[in-house]
Amino acid sequence: MEKIMLTIDKMPPDARVWVYQSSRIFTDTEEISIKEQGKNFISTWTSHGAEVLASFDIIYNHFIVISIDENNALISGCGLDKGLHFIKKLENLFNITLLDRLQVAYRKEDGILICHLSEFEKLAQQKIIGKSTIVFNNMIASKNAFDTEWEVTLEKSWQNKVLQ
Image 1 (tube, rainbow, N blue to C red):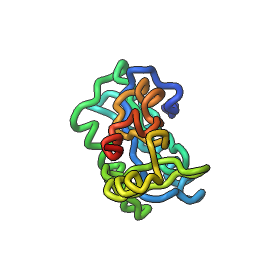
Image 2: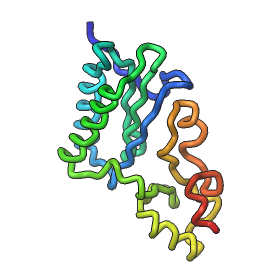
Image 3: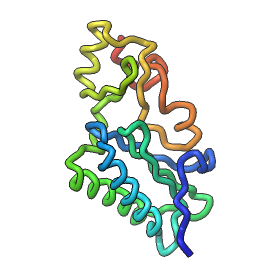
């Protein structure tokens, strides 16, 4: 029987979540391919032989979101390594960066911009961004946090130190 691929909205509030921010927007062709590879990865993901109940999403053409329902089976270090190996494979295949935590994504008008944290600090000093700027907190760890703390104003994020 084929394993059903879930999406983040179908995961329980306590599901573990990882957000991988791309260094650039995905093309339509890349997004289709990445989703297919994500589906294939999720469908075969195991941890100590137990099937991992997981979801895979691409959000705003910039973010890969993977979540795991550990109520089904706890993920082991080896299971986590498989997930990280998959993300590194995507980086190589699509010539993108997904693991650079010093890149900050924020909303500007109708788009999402990404810059290095040092550049983000300069934007704050120049008052180009401010406390009401929407930023993405990719450090969240649960589905509940994803729903409530992932997309927040700068003043409510870990990046708020740039305002001081």
